[in-house]
Length: 215
Length: 268
Image 1 (cartoon, chains in turn green, brown):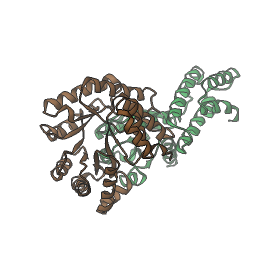
Image 2: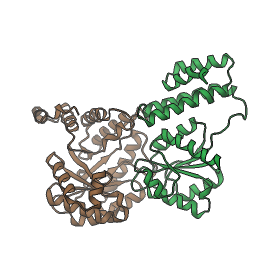
Image 3: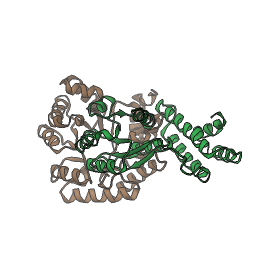
Image 4: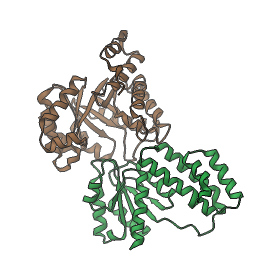
């Protein structure tokens, strides 16, 4: 893993030029594209997530890093072995009905995708029924719900209850987030986890996947 | 600058607890402090209580009015809560915070403000979600203003909020807001604008520096209302600076007054 340290450092530093150079150099030296992705780029995004959580890095840096990572993945794509990429898990993501805020949700999307998750974003102002039908058709491991208003966080509970009524509550782990949401609120409405920001959301999703795989 | 004091909001821990425990002292002190520091309206918000919101919002209005003549900005999307609070409100005309072009919000709030002399904050938000561009904001503003005026709300009573979005998410968001303020102020002469401005710095460190600089610039572009903490000296200094630079401060009197009051010494 240490061989990709310069790639990892370039991404963490949001250094576009260095990242491009290092990725190209490493490919031409015969490293596997899958290894660059899994042991260089994804661990770098993990570090960025942690630093966002601890307040050392900030939203624009996370956005830039996600953009650089996407560019690096495009460079790697022709070299990635077909079908060899193992998804970290499937996540269905959206903002609940009555709420059109998408900034936090989009950050979570980027962090999860950068961490190797297959993510489907169903957008904002999403009715509980739509989440139910999307869970049935997409069959995610995790459902991630966002609500940013004190007036819309009750819709988190409504959505979770709707999954219960449809008999599919136990088919997914549910994580919730958004400014007025707290761990105690998440516990109260029967969610499986709460993330305070996009960095912790990514860490939480990995923890929930570990729980799923342990059972 | 028309300052709407933001501190009596149930989502702040001290106020939420005060409401729960019916501790009127904290609410009254917070109201009189904001009035003393130049608030033109005292915002009251009990949004976190949902079913109990009408009762709690009314309780807030009663306690604010017990200590100051400064009118309230009644902050809720719930028409029942607003009507209950309005029924108790006496003295100077209060403000309703807020209406928007979202269908539910529009239909709930319009009957409350139609044909009255109430002030109203109108958010540039529609069923299509958050506006993305200056043109989006102008289209929504146009519908809001025309809809309100046709329902006998005077232009002078409308405060358009073009919505501040975080600079850290998109480098254009600062200028989009500023351009919107200028176009709204120019197109609808006599209208007011207002905003909760601190969203500009969301996700960035050193937020107060961004907030203050943005306030100064926004005032020079025509912003004349803001929802903020009136006890924040640095922010009041930023407003005084903006008004002076915008040529709205005869003989720089307000700037000098702010300077002598020590507002520019606020470094904390």
